Length: 191
Length: 198
Length: 190
Image (cartoon, rainbow over all chains, first blue to last red; front, side, top):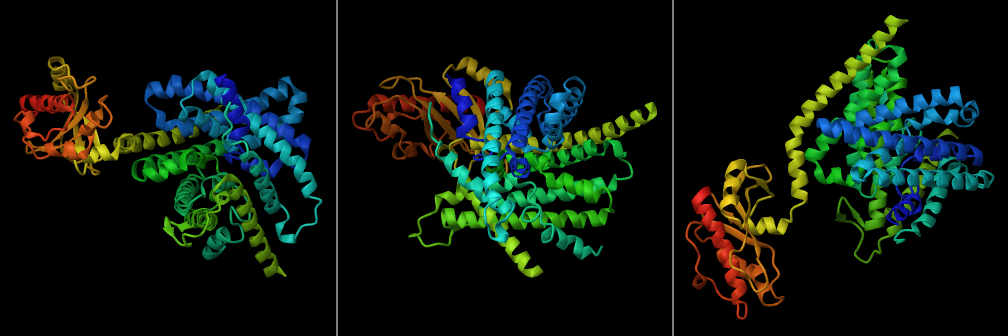
């Protein structure tokens, strides 16, 4: 039950984009079409979950034991960068279809602060293994939800008659703000 | 390029937040008060300038094939230094900025400057580029965070500037306010630059 | 090709090693202050000020053997601490102890601070289960303030303290805790 609650909280109530702002760059940069947005979202779920598992194990098994917690940032970002490389190579060889669909997003994910953010939060919140896994999946699913919803709205916004100065990222941010109002409505939700 | 132009470039024409819109996660998240905005701006400027110096100094030593991982190590090292120093000497600010301090490492603007400028220019120019980009980042942080603090709290740096009767606009310090106010700020910048061009 | 690979790995290794070395040094330099900050954040400033004015936190005693000896001989003592100010200077000793005489309902738990001159700098209640409105008044500054400035080497008698009507047992329990701290202070710490 607690895990269900943790999932809902990380998925919607504390939505990673609308409430925590992690991963806002790819969110604003990529999502113009729903299917590309979905592709990006699925790639992010995959990488965040995998990265969280590996960084969790490395943190507790290696860094804490050796008293090297201060190297956390360096170690985590190197793990994430090499993981993304590795996933890219692996998909290219063994699942070309999937690689076609997700491949172009993968290099962008290294600098997606959502990945590092979730990995660090798992440690900061002192989650155990299973809750950290649930938190990672919930949060990244929240990213997928946000980016797909936003792509749908943005499709319409792009056709609207706007003042010249607001075109592009200005109106995207304002749109995201209005969607964030909707998500604010979930705050305080208790299961 | 003229030294002054390198600096001005970062503040105005290529302002990382207001024009390029990169690295905006922290901009949205922590600009709820001016002191946070300044703290984050100074932290990013320090990491940016520090990594620009080291990467520029090592630009002939680092082979092209491994330059990205090498840059990432340098940037992560500077980020960790700032993290440790703030944890030790500016504790309240450290708690307020939270996870966004280690996340400086994935702030795209820093890697972008390493790749586009520091790895191709001498140390002195790289310092100016780092300071200019940092100043541009700081400027955007100050504009957004002071607006949010005034509207959402009626104060600036904790001092009351609006009369007690002012009903704080909670939305300004909540997540939607961050998106909408940054959107409007970018709209204003676009308007001014369009006007200048015309 | 193979040579090139070795070179690439070597370059990355050198950068990584230098970076880790610098961070290890900086971590060493800052770790004490960081620990202090974290500990300060977890302490109640009102208690600190009441027990030792000007202190920002209580550190564990350096002489851990002594602490173990005392705890072995005096089972009511919980810990010996050093009160420090914001720049880390020692302001005095603090003893954390239970009362030796039961209150109306259970033991009381106190901090008793001692100045370097051997006077009581202040007393504060950490926990008690005394009756609300009667025994609970022993936790208020009006009562605890009476101990400030008394000698840390002479046991306090109940006559020296203004009693609280209807709360004799609580007062006795409180005084016994202070006296237990005084015993420990005059025997081991002074």
